[in-house]
Image (cartoon, rainbow, N blue to C red):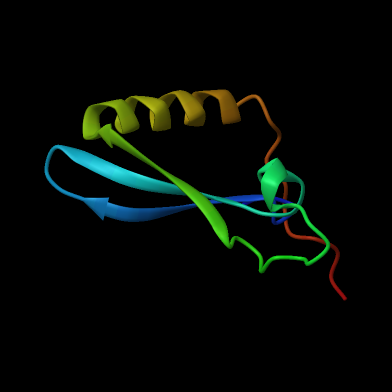
Length: 79
């Protein structure tokens, strides 16, 4: 989960050998040509990346390893 809605990921397509991921861009992460006077809808722009399943599995393992250095945060204060 991200604190700001600047970037998000979704699965566009998959098969047994590869996946196509969408990287959705919003707010400060918009491409320069998309920042005009009108505010586009959130995550209206995206890029697709196709990669082998093994590459994605390896990246996820590395991401999980890197996340271990961050403290686990509990739920916020009870209201």
